[in-house]
Image (cartoon, rainbow over all chains, first blue to last red; front, top):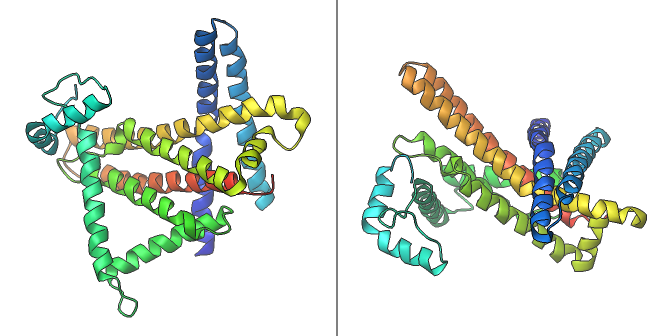
Length: 71
Length: 245
């Protein structure tokens, strides 16, 4: 029962990882876009796009290393 | 304007359009068609809410320590399952959080499954519903983080373990936290929408075997997505309340 539960847990975690990278990238860009619009600048969307991509990768690596550490 | 109006929505629009317009007016929301302020997802959500209320009222009246009924057994199993999962993801005292996890799981599950009943549709296949649930989860785990760790300690964990890296880590953490509700929304909405569309596409082709198979798959996806949403909420709560950072 415990093993089965662990499998469900792992399955759900990995399903969660699928949308992590694209959404972080999109949210980063969206924040930058809104800041550019509010502050009248043009470069923040690029900066936050990069931050979004990095944030996605950081989360992805965190999740994967945590799983590896648990094994 | 919605594509087609379910019979329940038509009833709501016929008899309750006035109160809906008044409520929306209070929040200064402009309705496109004042004769049809109710959308299918709203009435379906209300129906799920009513079903849950009735179900738990019945369950409450039948609770027994000596002779637990079948319904009580089912919900005890669900409760234990969620509690054990919360413990597995690292929440040390999960009992006080299970109320939220359970509510979320049951509500999403019922919302997902109601679409299987003919003449009804899943409210979760409209982005507003998963978005509302995701925002509630976002507010909940942050609130729990502030409550368990205090304002300063909770905010400090956004800066990461090394103070020198704080200027880099803070925007990264902020973006990754803000991506969570969007990620929860898209996953639930896309899966339910796709499941419904596939079943409908096969129903248009044939009434034999194939739609039933895909409907079965849709039920499985409904269960899985309710579980995934709840489990990710547990993971976020666990990360928000952990004291190691």
